[in-house]
Amino acid sequence: MTVHAAMTDASATAQAPLQDLMINVSPCGGRVLVTICGELDLCTEGALRSALREAVGRGTRGVDLDLTETTFCDCSGLNVLLAARRDALRTGKTLTVQAASRQVQRLLSATGTGSLFVCRRAPYPPSGTALPAAETQEDALSQEEELRTEVVQLRRAMQTRAVIDQALGVLMASFRLSSEDAWNVLVTVSQNTNIKLHRLAGQLVTTVQGVALADAVQAQVAAAVAALHAAANMPSEVPRPTEAGEGGGDGQ
Image 1: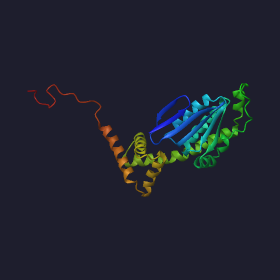
Image 2: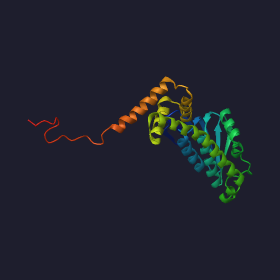
Image 3: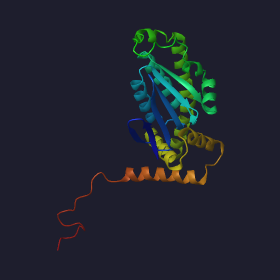
Image 4: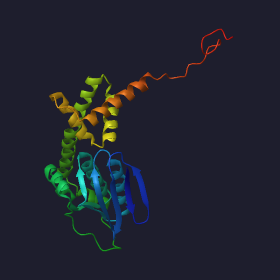
């Protein structure tokens, strides 16, 4: 499936392994409106980061986000939004959330980050007037906001990473895999079943409590593990025939 970043003067396409994500970027005066439709998670954070980086660069005054069609956002997506906000402030700009879906509103409320995406600064001067110095705008990012942002990032990352780490442990113990192989299995199954990484991890963790995986998921796990073992057992070089011939005979 694809991630589409639709812009007024160009379009770009990147690969997204799990679902479609559409990001529309359109200039609006000195600001840029970014409309995000779809899901923001570990699999689409790269596309989101690239789109927001370009939007911050193009907007002379800042970026406004329309998240009304954003159907899901986890800690990965939130961290990208927070990072983009910091980048905007450091260049004398702002990044605000103009509208958001109920799911995104709940996330912002639960993490206490909603206020970070509301512009409380004085209006920008009219077009053609010199913008405030970047240093002045950066000073406006208070130490309290900095600390709160970092706490939120750590809290959300810990919640998601904890279940993923537990799932890796289950795979490692069940199939005698290394941590790297367990991660590859988890990602492969997530892609092939179209199940989000953290949700698949949660399902794997519950197997320890006797909850069986769905047959389709079990089959994908078995296939991914078998593929790893097959790759590990492949010879590094094709054996060369002996001088006496491939069959080992006397060459006659």
